[in-house]
Length: 405
Image 1 (tube, rainbow, N blue to C red):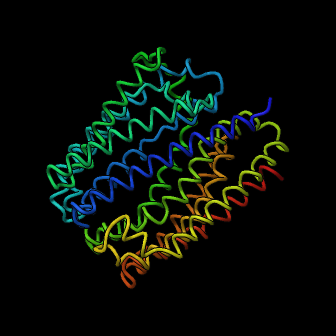
Image 2: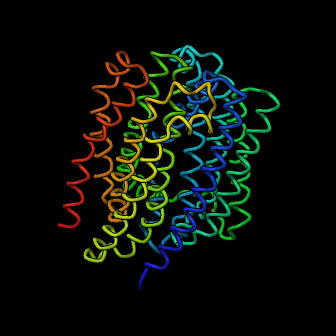
């Protein structure tokens, strides 16, 4: 059975989804950047750092497993929901316990109320019906578009409305919480197959065993993506962190979105054709060519027109991010191409390669990030991301050679 037409449809719908949600995100940030200060964005960034770290620390890889197991979704449904709920409870509890440490580490008492709400977000997300993953698994990307697009609109509207009313960074996490509550409700309204809270030891252990490499990859990926934020926030303060995070967002968003779209669509397709390596290689190379063309185009636009982009999306008060914006645009192009190999590794249950790639990247960044930031400020953080990429690349090349020989 050919999947080329399904892939094209999937790419079309996921492009529409990611494009529309990113456009809404840009509009949201454009509005909030004129209501809030860079320091307030930095406080919000700290709250996301805490949430992101704990979520990847407890990542079970259950969604990856449900796709890899092909037709075995419902037999894992109860166990998947059980694991998800326990994970949500654990993450929310640890966030609450870690609030004093986060306030002390970043010297930012104003992050406290945000972390209370972020704990609620983690708790709520644990109750989402795992059947949601069947949209991606069955290549039903049109339904994915309407579900996730609607949730993003709810998040954005809530954040803007609360932001206009309060002029507080808390508006952004309230948007996250409202969207999480709505997603739980919709996941049980849309899907008639519903999980029960029951424990199956055999399936639970299988999830943990298969998910260990996903957990490791998630931890290293988080460190890869956030150690620069942590160092900037710790040693330079919340205002430079706010500047750096928005530069990162503008520069990497267009190119990373292209990679995410193709990864999400090709992963379930590669699962289905993975046993035919010749066919898999042809599909991979064809798609890789398209990705390189697209991300290089977006990256060139950012490199050529950084100042107009800053003025349009953030305003004149953010023009100081122009130098680091250019550096991060180069990183975004390189990392998007690198990450595309991950969909092949996950489809073939080679999670270990993904984890090792992220590990080598974080080792490279870990060596250079502190001296680079202390010497060059946020620009040094940008340079460190490219160094990290060069450390990850050999692992991905090795993995692809192993797959295609």
